[in-house]
Image 1 (cartoon, rainbow, N blue to C red):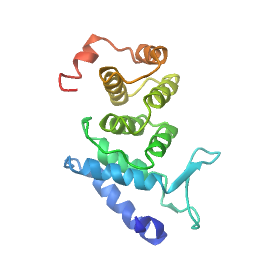
Image 2 (image 1 turned 135 degrees about the vertical axis):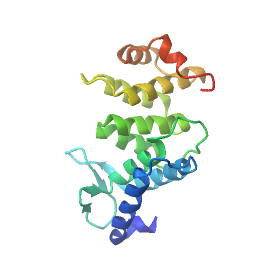
Image 3 (image 1 turned 90 degrees about the horizontal axis):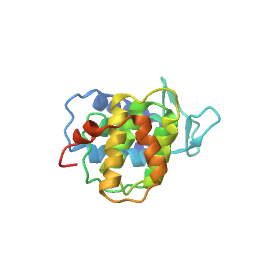
Amino acid sequence: MDVIANGNRVERLKYLLKFLAAWKERPACLTPIAYQWCSAFSGMTKGPRLDGTYERRGSHPFLQLTGFTYADLPLEALEIGFRLARPAIGLSQTSHHDRVFEVAFSIRDDEVIADAVCAWIADSGCTPVGSLISHLADRAESTTPFLPRLRQMAIHAIHRIWSSELAVSALETVRLLDRLEVDVDDMDDLGEGD
């Protein structure tokens, strides 16, 4: 991650990430790598400014590269690892995992949130269940309906929570399921292996 510390190399990294994000048939082996990148990149950001964007840590001034910021790095990594992936279990917990979800949900973009939920499904030990449900419930309060992919990922995550008997607020979960308008067909669509 020396590339990140050296602001002159970030633009090259940006091009690599854009290339990988555009790759329509990414191999599955890229998912755990992108998840590790997401964690490393998240460690380079700090909390949101008043305008809701994230800033880079360190002594360098915050860089803005043709509309691309340090805060975009974990989001690009999420997209590379999870936008085309079907949720699978088996990723190893990474450092800065809480920051990944904090950044993803703060963006208020359903595709980015769906990427983060897919990552949570792959490594449910990385963020507390209550935190995930709380973030999804907050999103559900919006008058804008969930995009189909986020709805599918949220249902899949709730299924994973209940099938794993993870502790979560039943009332908050029921409200979320009601907002998602989940029916039996949605649960059947998850398949036997999930």
